[in-house]
Length: 230
Image (tube, rainbow, N blue to C red; front, side, top):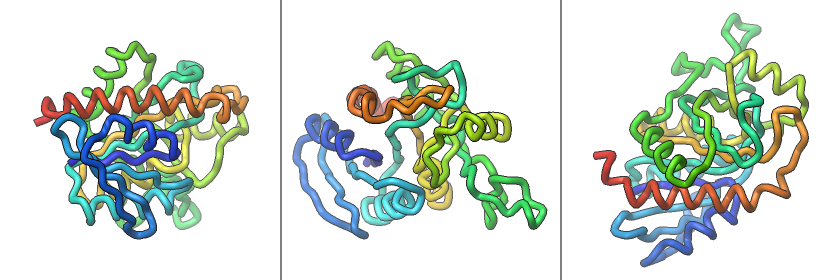
């Protein structure tokens, strides 16, 4: 079973249109939609905004549905001029930029308890997602995606994240979903459409719907080809 976690209701609603044999239930306060795309079993949910909601959703999905992998989709702000509006950032790894125990001598971003800063996405999932993006003729860039409980719009903050972590995009959920997957040994991938530019101009409302539609097109194609991952 493939788990899909979206940050926006419109993403899951659009995915639902491609699903059959649909059932719904609520677990840990999260509404989960189960069904099939072709013969592949899917469970999808909207996690809500921020790291805690995302972690609750991912943990519940793993424990309740025993998913084989999780894909997180949504939007992000670009941290590099190489990503434009509606381009896609694909996470080779994730980092929680607001995790900071540096007064104790730790590097910023270190996840205490597992002694890691960067958590890697699954290479096979990443490669297949990139193939699907190419087939959809969507421009993308692979690299580090930085997560924190902040909407990053300030150009100086973007510059800091780029320099500190070599991150290409910033958002609010992917790093915590990656953290939960890492702890549960579940492969994951993070796919984020760019909704605001590296320079800091926020275009979220204008581009969110378009971003959701293109993300779902890629995910549906991925699901139909998921057998190639075996």
